[in-house]
Image (tube, rainbow, N blue to C red; front, side):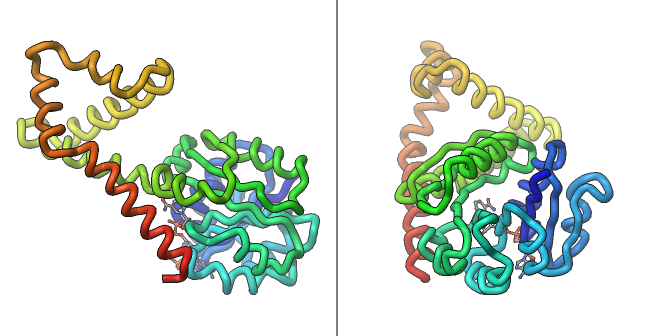
Length: 266
Ligand SMILES: NC(=O)c1ccc[n+]([C@@H]2O[C@H](COP(=O)([O-])OP(=O)(O)OC[C@H]3O[C@@H](n4cnc5c(N)ncnc54)[C@H](OP(=O)(O)O)[C@@H]3O)[C@@H](O)[C@H]2O)c1
């Protein structure tokens, strides 16, 4: 059975291990906080390993889910355990494949993966970068299959990672901020907070499902909700006057700028 180890079991690392719990893998985790690892699945499902080095020794696939500024030190710590039988998968934003390869000193193949927060409910959207020539096709296919157990996974060249990261990695925060605005409206109109929250989340989920399944453009679907002289068009007109779509675009482009700064070590 493949051994999947994860170092850093916070939002992302914990989410990925949780997503793999129902599947046929041996799961190992390491974190500063032992309880974060042991709380991921049913008791005993994810084994807590005392050190990053031991985790790397015991794993076939080593997932690194610490913060980007912690990556260099972590790669140095696990390096003695790495050889060509293993693959290091990094979830860190703005940490390049070149830095990864330097960090592992070419001892094993490296893969960049960009996840997003819905991985914790099995609805992650992942980008995987298989640009490392030392990664063979069988290993790449295996990783793609594994990440597809936790949502949707696409293969992208590294050059497109900043765009993916700004749009899909950061995206849940942008959508949630929009949902906060809807929640305030619901409460203002007299709906209870808990009821509003549930209705808004279900409405957003349903709208996303409709967009995915219909294949129609977002604009065409929106027009279907806007009856002539109706309520929705009044709200849409207000959003257009406030330039909401343009501001959303700019928010993503701001995230992209920060990604570029981080990649440059700022
Ligand atoms: N959050 C997102 O939506 C998102 C999206 C895409 C990519 N990412 C990437 O995913 C990575 C993880 O982000 P996250 O949001 O999951 O962060 P997080 O919740 O802070 O999780 C990181 C975990 O790693 C632990 N850790 C750090 N250094 C360690 C060490 N040397 N030994 C043991 N444990 C260590 C931290 O423990 P302490 O807290 O005790 O230090 C924490 O529990 C980042 O590189 C980020 O760029 C995140």
